[in-house]
Image (tube, rainbow, N blue to C red; front, side, top):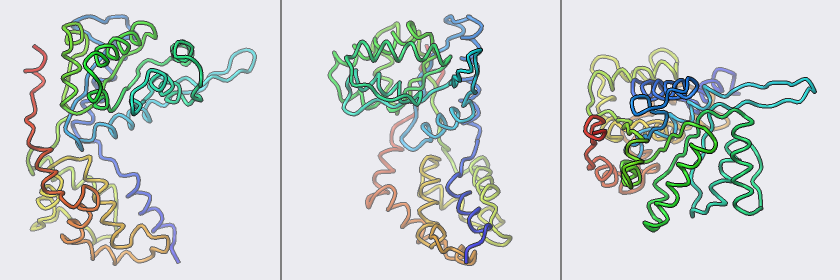
Amino acid sequence: MKNDEHKEFQARISNLFIEHDEVTRIWRRLDKNRRNKRAGTESAESPIHIFIEGKPGAGKSMTLKKYVKKNKGWTVVDEDDTETDIKPVIYMTLPIPFTYKGFYNNILKAMELPARNADVDRIKTQAFEMMKALKVEMLIIDELDYLLASTFVQRKAVMENIKDIANSADVCLVCVGTLAIEELRTLNTQHIRRYPKTVLRHFENCDDAFKAFIKNIEVQLSPPPGLLDWTQDGSVFPEFLYEVTGGLVGWIKPILREAFDIIGVMEEDFNDFNVLKNLDGDVIVEAQKNIIGEFADNDMAKILADELVSEEESTG
């Protein structure tokens, strides 16, 4: 029979998230933008909007979802005992396929409000009004890559609508996607000036920083002593995990979770930590192929082939 210790271990696997240096750097940047907004100091030197780019699997979405959870807000009660949930930071993705009705309904859903089957202008008006009512400071728009499938005319129009949100709803905008969304940021000079870019970088080498990241995973999972000693002297696990993930932290959690699933750790009747001894290189490779696909090595090579443009080079 499974006891609390086994359930807690499963929960730690499911909730695994490591705040490495790139994550905290992004969070500090977002905090700064919100402070600038509250202080009314937006300028070319103190921008409040940002594009966050990175390779697929770099961990962008999870980093931003965790930021929303860290800033989940609070409830205020007015003199009539009416409760209002203040939501300083909200997160949405672009609808697929893109429609303006879907876009503004996704903003409503980001505030945990129901989608509406009304005309676009009414949905837009309600979205803007509710952002002000709930004191939204920051709107994160993820998966901007979906817009790249649209025509050039629609891309320009949507980017103008996104700019309108910043003006009309008075929020900081965070536009998120792969390195390809640089095409959207550079559609015109106004966007370039208004939306500085930063890149959420992956681990480019299996160095001490990556090994420290793996050690932090061990610490967070907290298995019984003697099991999963991934960073002990002589262990090749960090090098092997780096090889199958390319240092892309967004792949590490799903691959590890799949590996634990393969050896039975995530089963309802899991009750023996000794099965952790079965987590070897073959299991990790099987997990990689299950998560990324049968041609995982080729797909990973394509992802890593793009050259990152440094932030300094891209903000001139």
